[in-house]
Amino acid sequence: MNEEQIDIKTPEFVSLKYKLAGLGSRGAAIIIDQLLLTIATVGIVLFLFFLTDTFETTGSTIPLVIALIAIFMLNYGYFFIAEYFFGGKTIGKKMIGIRVIQENGHSITLLSSFIRNLLRIVDMLPNFYVVGMILVFFHSKHKRLGDLAAGTIVVHESRAKGKIKQTAIEKEIASRGLSEDSLELEEWALRSLGTKEWRLIKTYTDRLLQLPNIEGRELTNQMATLLFPKVGLEIENRTNEELENMLLVLYLKLKNEWEFEL
Image (cartoon, rainbow, N blue to C red):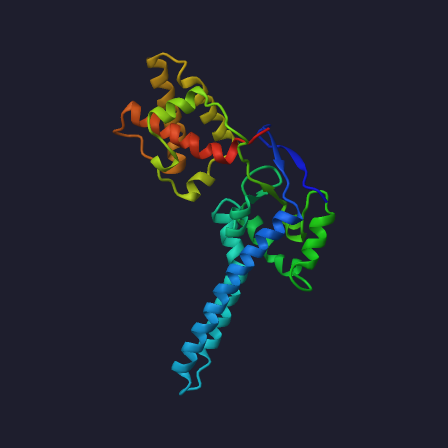
């Protein structure tokens, strides 16, 4: 089945378009992840042999128990942890350029990630994701069993095609020497912001350069007061320019998550 586009209406009435990830891209991602997991598993087994030599005089089974627990946690915890804490992306998905999201367009939740990856055990049957591959191939939204139960889909990351003319605010951001790395935020902080906050920060950046200085400062203070507590940023003892810069960097960070090519 060819990869298709899906149009999602979010609860905030924002229309988003995604390109669904099909069997080819998802298969490539899982191959990369499984190769990495295999390497890690071999490392655990070699470490087990080392511990076995250490404990062989006592006949202890502790090394075997430790190794089995570690291998289980690695193979079934890796996907759950990576997809939830790293924006729906495992290492394989990141390299291929795909990620998991909720079917409503929001980032994957803790519960959805748990359900999705718990059912990975079934999708892997009878060997190397045969059940999962069959479902992905035939389902209209390329869903495996875990996606059906968790209400998730796998989509391609938005990538710019060709050279895109910079907007006025992007030129302003560049002139200030700002980038995403100009402000450090924890992953949990970014995940606490949704489409509502994105629309606010987008409106702010659209209006900032058009407002007189006084109105611009007032708008900056209002936005900072509203958004910064949600991501753990302090407002006190900061100049207006510092607040503007922080909001503009926040815009850059949210842009990657919420602004998609239509």
